[in-house]
Length: 176
Image 1: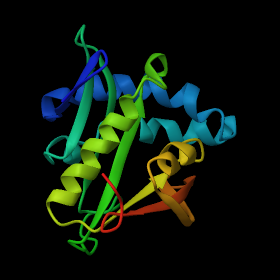
Image 2: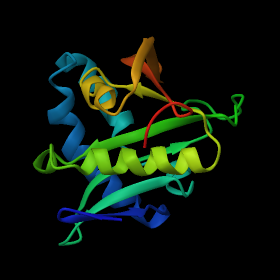
Image 3: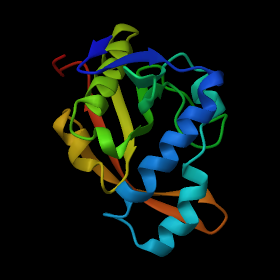
Image 4: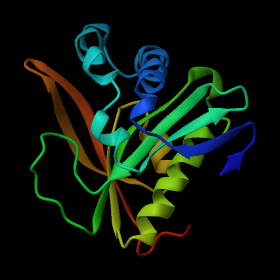
């Protein structure tokens, strides 16, 4: 898939370093608008690591600029975020670990990645997508049709919790 100045491609384990670099470039400046500095100081180290399971999933994608720079990432899985071995509902997909480089905001990168995830999930019979939105990303997900359904504090490490907004998108009635 190609968009203005970038393409979308599946990520793989070999992309771990590039994804980590993107997360380190994105999360500190973008999350500062919604979280106190002391929360970010404790939470960001756990959040800024590429997830090997996502990189192997086949449903995690990168937005790559014409010069080869990774400018966005994000994907979806049927497995919910958190500890493995949680129950999996085959009709529910989970949006996972999205980020856009600050220099590429509002240029369609996140929307293209999310659109790819929605289309893939719909094709394989997922009827609802859920995500744990950061406090700063709620408007982004809402612009794609997601609705807030609650709040959840995600435990990132012992004593480190990160407040999130639980959002869902019904695919059976969503357009796309």
